[in-house]
Length: 338
Figure 1 (tube, rainbow, N blue to C red):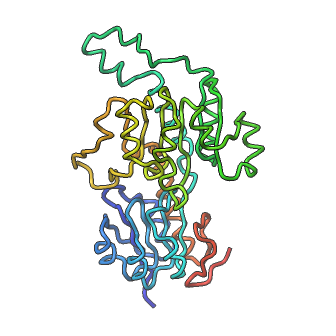
Figure 2: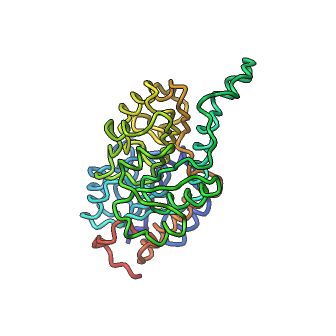
């Protein structure tokens, strides 16, 4: 019988930890590491693998269809929009993820962007070397207490932001398709549910907390952005394609909204190999704070996502369901125990 084989992608941009190797070795698997940002690279290394571990590469349907032995695709992170999960399910491949590895970091980063926008920190920083002391009289700086933060989505990440934002005396409102699922959490956090259009028109800060799905792609387009006020700021640490990026550039250029704090992008591949100079309209605007998809990053969270993700792959190779299953309806290629 052939030895079990595991392939870990993104090994250059996200180096492999010893704990990952140890978890897979304990499951009887040898580990091969590649960067694998192109389908042909992935298949050259992983066509006969039993487990595929991925941080940021796209794993499209044509790649999954060619993985003839693969039992599991382990996402070493939360979102699975870069993995063709439906194809994996049809092929009997269990997909896992680590949905909660960076809740604190993402919430902290969201509040960091909110505060930086509220206090006009980029403008203040530019003013200092030029001696423009009157920047302190910026007309866009308002008292934070009493202003409204609108949370688009009300899952764990939005709730983590709400807990932090309450300390700044912000009014908290949220939109979710199923508010009835979150009544107790909203009551405990002092959050009022509103229809999306009303949330957009009433909030001075709008923060997105949704996965990227067919239903959420382009959720905030030109009509929705037009409902935001001229003093409002958009914050996105979720997925770039939830917002119509061209429409966002337009309202920012026209100052139809005050600013944006963005950690995710539709038109910038922040997972490409580093060192490539990026040209994008959002990076040319002085009312945008852009960060390189680092909202969930810390030494601790990065290690946790890798180690727990590798542990999920090891669980499947040992004949057990992983702790976090993305496609629980899958009929696995080999029987799994709880």
